[in-house]
Each structure stands twice: as structure tokens, then as C-alpha cells.
Amino acid sequence: MRKLLYPFEIHPEAKTMLDLGCGKGIVSLYAAARGLTVDAVDKTPEPPPLFRDVPNIRFVAADLEQWTPTRTYDIILCHYVLHFLDRTYVVRDFLPTLIHHLNPRGVLQLFVFTPQDFTSVPTKFSPEELLPIFRNLDISKNEMFIEKEDHPPIGKHEHHTLWLAARR
Ligand SMILES: C[S@@+](CC[C@H](N)C(=O)[O-])C[C@H]1O[C@@H](n2cnc3c(N)ncnc32)[C@H](O)[C@@H]1O
Image 1 (cartoon, rainbow, N blue to C red):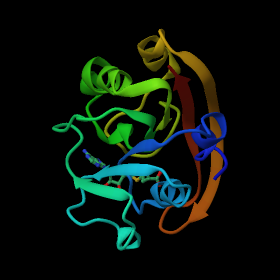
Image 2 (cartoon, helix red, strand yellow; image 1 turned 180 degrees about the horizontal axis):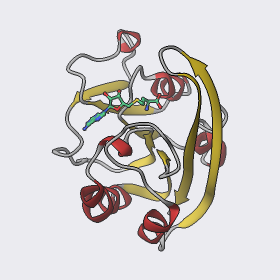
Image 3 (cartoon, rainbow, N blue to C red; image 1 turned 60 degrees about the horizontal axis):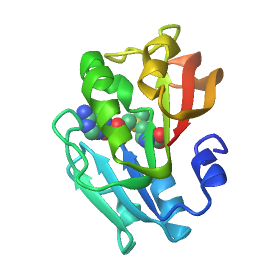
């Protein structure tokens, strides 16, 4: 959990956040509880039930391959979602556009599966292909880590993840 919350540690004065592929919305809820105004995007048509009655989270149902931000943010999260998108789109369009939507001192954080990961997702990313996109930002995290998991139906397995955080 600490990794997920890293942007709040290094940008405690953040006021706005964009959570892309928000899933159940746990990090969005954490941000909202800290008083941030949150836009949370996911392709699922309905907002996560936990967003009900949380006035400072706006849920947007959208496919990220068809959607671009209309606002700027202090924190942008791409947690475990980029590997569902097209590689060329992510590298050439999506991430460069997100960087333009970071406020000064804003932080973009991503977690993606690397080519060493066994999970069957459409796209995996290496640091070599993502780091050049952030060349004009301060890279505050560039780590690869392995998480061991054991749950049905897969059983014991490992996830190979790249953690990148960059600041304007
Ligand atoms: C593995 S979950 C990650 C959820 C959350 N970010 C987290 O870290 O727990 C991936 C999420 O991305 C969403 N997703 C996948 N492809 C998407 C797309 N093309 N556009 C928008 N959301 C997408 C899924 O619906 C799912 O909620």
C-alpha cells in the first residue's frame, strides 16, 4: 500500500488527482478523505459502490484509448492499467498527453507489468521504453520489484512490476 500512496508523501500539498483505471477506487477514496478533488476513470460503466456519497470524487466511465483529460492535476495515477492498452498509443500519445496535464510540481505515478511477468495482458513495458517519455521530468522512482502471490485459480505465482514516479 505504501508504494501506491507515494505521490501523497512527496506532494503533500496536492489538491487534485486523476486516477486512471481506478478499479474499486481505494486510492481515490484515500485521496478524497485527505480532501483532494478526484477524477476517477474506468471503462466499467458503473462507479465503484464505495464512491457513493463521496462528493469530491467524480467518476468517468470511459475507455482510456478514447479519452483524454480536459483538466490539469497535481497527481496522476496509472496503477496497473497501462498494460491493458495498446503499446504504441501509450508511448506516443497517452503518456505524453498526461504529462501535459500535470500541474507544476505535479507527480505522475505508474505501475506496469514488465516483460518478465507471466500474466496474460496485452502489453508489457520495460523501463527502457518508458523512461525517455519522462526525460523532461524529475524521476523520483524507477524500481522493478517482484511480488509473490498465492490465490486460486492460479496458485503460487510472481508478478514483475515496474514502478515509475516522475515530477514536473
Ligand atoms: C488491475 S485493475 C487496477 C485497479 C486499480 N488501479 C488498482 O491498482 O487496484 C485494472 C483496471 O483498469 C480498468 N481498465 C482496463 N482497461 C481499461 C481501458 N481501456 N479503459 C479504462 N479502464 C480500463 C479495468 O476495468 C480495471 O478496473
